[in-house]
Image 1 (tube, rainbow, N blue to C red):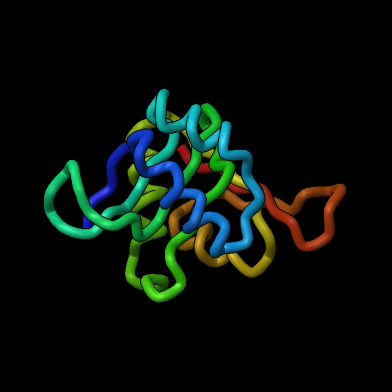
Image 2: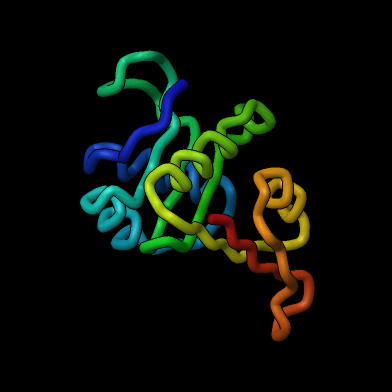
Length: 127
């Protein structure tokens, strides 16, 4: 498995992974990220140009808009690899998330604070 920038042909597979995680994100945002290096994919295999999309992360500048991994591949470090790849590409990364994924971001070293206006929602930041 390796992480790289998504290409335009992979947009449907990226949307499939995000939809499977019940994340709402516009296809235009994903496509724009593929064009500017902000949509990352974790793919199976060792070939940098091929492989099945196992997970995806979409950045809007330095903010993680979405990160998801195929259900059968969760718990294998794919989400961690995606976030670490985002950190390699940006000086600082932020995210907003629900309480159930708070441990994931804390384990990655994000500084987590509650959002004042939304119960059970948090904001994380890591440099």
